[in-house]
Length: 215
Length: 285
Image (tube, rainbow over all chains, first blue to last red; front, side, top):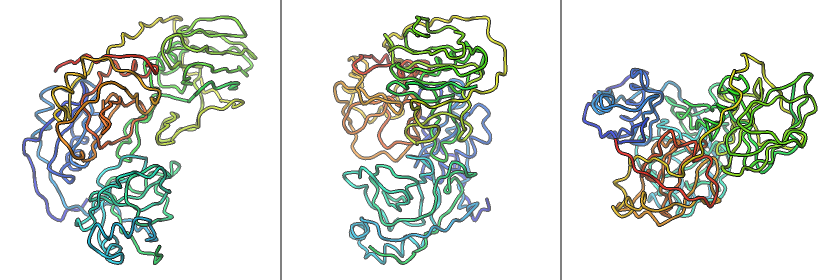
């Protein structure tokens, strides 16, 4: 990845016990978590897998975790970069979601301003979870910060474009879900027969494009 | 060379050792819920340990051998008897079946899941390198249906010298290490965790074994930013009733994980039946 500018962090990160064969490393934010996960999986031989979360990295080992590894994870410097993503994908969206009006109210915007905010920024894949190909997308700003719905829906349609907390995402398939639904897309987010199967994987950025539809 | 599923019982799934390493695209490792039992079933028939086998929930699985020559099989996992053409046979040993033979796994006397290993392994379409069925993400083969034919794979090694391998029954006590989020809970909740018996609920499945007991109360409110979870993690949702994540756990979760069951006890969790009572034993270090 090309780098605009960088900050090196080497604070003492809390390293929390996660059973015998793993630890959870707490980071200052998502960017540090992604950078730490990449560095540790590239350079630490004893590590089997690193899984970034919103502010943490789970580090899984083949053998029980020892103190020396804990110390290294706590202090290893990582370069938090403002990266040019490896790939930018455009996703066409019909902004016809059932929660669009409510989201506008929660953000103190009107519907057109919500759509402009959603299409007007670059969203980057921070980490994946919940379902195959379900990416937590981090935007450039926090204009569209909304709580999850107090009662999750029993069924959310595949291709639903959604917001929760500061994140945006697209449901890869039909699933129960508590995110606020603002639109829909026909893009295929997950196809096990495709390489890679996830449209939105690590290093990918997204621009949402307004297809003009309204509720 | 095929076998035909005559009756899948309550649930029969194809499982191998799963697809670890894909958490970054939201895919869980999945694979056999009781890994030691899956490995043993394969070893007893001379397969690589990670070959695809059938994981049967509460027995009832019935299969017929369609082959031109004898086929070695082994049933492991929960304590049960195996019936071949109406004749009783043992579990945890290699059995040779002839063309047309029908094998039926009885309901286990103890435990939940049995594994049918077949020499050559099951030849199923891999997804991300594995033929395992993940009931949470929907990856891998669908649950087996009556009448379905399963192809057998290629034999790659000799049969073992050992043909019987008994296993020790589980103790009902699960080793648990506190963390990473034990500081989200009151001292009373942490004390309850290892001082009471926890009842396994019928809502348990390959995603999680759900427990009932006194509510584990939090000292901190609020949401936890999503973080990774693994098999064996004991998560406490807002209900206060803990659950232990199994093979098909989600990749991340937003509720605090109070502790993690020792790796060596995770297979025992996969054999817990609804209504059974377990205890946690807190370990340190």
